[in-house]
Length: 180
Length: 331
Ligand SMILES: [Cu+2]
Image 1 (tube, chains in turn yellow, brown):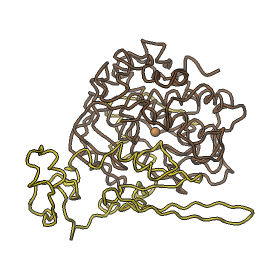
Image 2 (cartoon, helix red, strand yellow):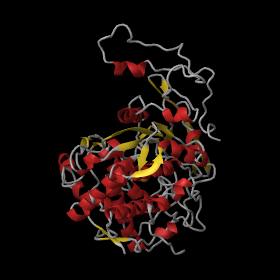
Image 3 (cartoon, chains in turn red, brown):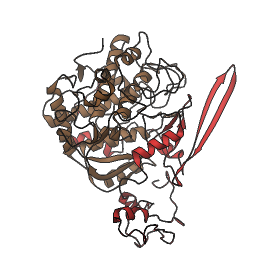
Image 4 (cartoon, chains in turn green, purple):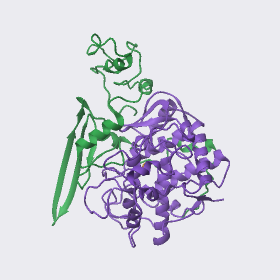
């Protein structure tokens, strides 16, 4: 075995791998993580050999929650249990139960507005740009605001997310390509 | 100098030093903001970026980021839940490296070069009636704080979560307290018990085996917890390491689970069980030369995914005695 010179080091030295983008990364990086689970549709393939015969089972899930595609994909284990990458310690017999867990853990709204996407020009449904910003691809024609007239007594917090549904016509947004 | 890793429920000194260390790391500015990290990591890792708000991160947060990135790294051929830190033979060596780097940072911020990470022998609490488990000596204001809801008591009330897994994305959000939900998942009423450890360490059990994934029956998968070896081939509730994550819930659920100091206590116990296996079976690792279907990036001499500290290979961590030892290994 190679002797390891290893002190842990001070902070600058310690973060050197981070500054250079990480060590031990596979060629092609995380592209795989976005290959499946696009638009709520994910496919996994199980194979087995039995008495010399090859079994191949391709399973595709197309999942929406409140009509919106589930972000990230589901995979089927050989024993039939279903796994969601965002909850890395779970595999459940039922995809419905798994979606319930996803809702229990994450809800339906992201934990923040996405100003980081705006910084790299990757505007999306949750971005933080002010409306009508120049060069901004959002269009608000399709916005619906179901409570805007009836519920004036409700707090504005409940309104703000529901009204924030942008239409994406003409806005190309493909994971895995945006940064190359 | 080497550290001795002690049981957190029997060593108040190890516990208090650890809690002071993690709170300090959680408050220490790393010098990186989330937008800077995107500039660094997006080109290096195609398809990866942080979402959410631009904010300065702490040293503690960088470990959360590192774990999340490693979890996104594919190992080929693709298998469910297999990546360059989980779901395959790399699980134990990668987390050994990860814990070692945190231990060294705790040694730095506490000024105690012999500070060892404590472990949580969850089988002791697993032996309690289920309703008493979230009230064991681990929890409460002298220890890890609240077992359910926001952590507002004890030293960890000072901690703030800034990076959170949301689905399969990592989001930067307004700092908030840690959150837990211990013992409330009906599928996982209790922690692993002593018999689970006995089964995992069964005489003659190999380290790992074909197909080197979440279906393989070997020591690695028994402790990672994808299978219940007493019910072979059946879909089972999460076991061992997985079970502890799921049982605690809250921030221990998503891939950002190193937010909670309990992550390290759980993994330190997992590492301790591995040390017991290595002591009994020799400092060996598989897959090795001549094995079939070896997953990429998980060989003995492959460099493990590293964002902090020197990059190591599984071969470098099979003998940890230059860094630390355990006060006690399972009998
Ligand atoms: Cu992990």
